[in-house]
Length: 377
Image (tube, rainbow, N blue to C red; front, top):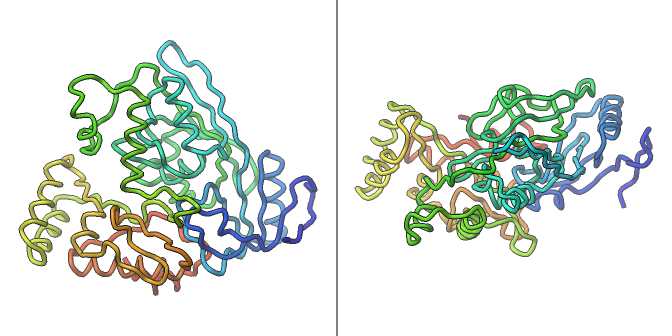
């Protein structure tokens, strides 16, 4: 058993040399030098005090669904928010607010909202991870993102332990982006969040998969439960949900591209030069379906036309049905995953000119290791 390190909160001891693999959906990674599970402000502050005294870097670990941990682990203190709970409150005749603790399972939040007849996050069903971590990446799916419903987030400063509320605007949301993974990275712990949901919403079925699923029913509006069931079915067919018996993954590994007109024209020329008319037609169809600017090009499309589905490296593999996902097929190391991701990036860049950005956070790696594996942007 890991040794406990005594400090001022004996009921919540900091542990040494805790394996991180069980805390990640990829089931990959070495140990944390120190690890603390915290549920109260006092426990969080005690952990921060310990890190400050020992001069340790801090990593806040949520549900572990969007990270790759180095095989060597993390040489500082990992803080794991563990408090759960959802408190609904009325916000007028047409809305309700859900106040959610950061350690709550995100899909349990969606399940409750659907059960209570609340609209706004049903398209975000079946996404692994904790509720607090959902804000970091501004998780999104099928035309919706968590930023669409966020009322506020309660956060604690890693520097001084002070707690404050941030509005959605202050969180700086964009595609797969927030201040928590960009301008204010490693500055806050998310303690809780409040979502404003509607009692009388309308379904968002703009994505082809959802349109095809409900086409046979005609103009009748699907219920919240039917939308959730449809999305769970679609995601299970395309995105392997991390389960112990099926090996692990970190969710989508590559971000979709958001291109201006000139960038898209350059991609179009590359596809025309290096691929056949079928691939070019598919790219032009993507262009027709996209909003005027920026043009959203699925990374999965580029990976697929480059022939990378099913590509393997050690125990890691590009998923056959949804190549945005890299799989741990059993015994994969973090180095296997990074090497495979680097191969995908280099191949796509050589054949299409596009540079794929990674979605998961890389934890415990040096800059040199990342550059050697992935190349420069």
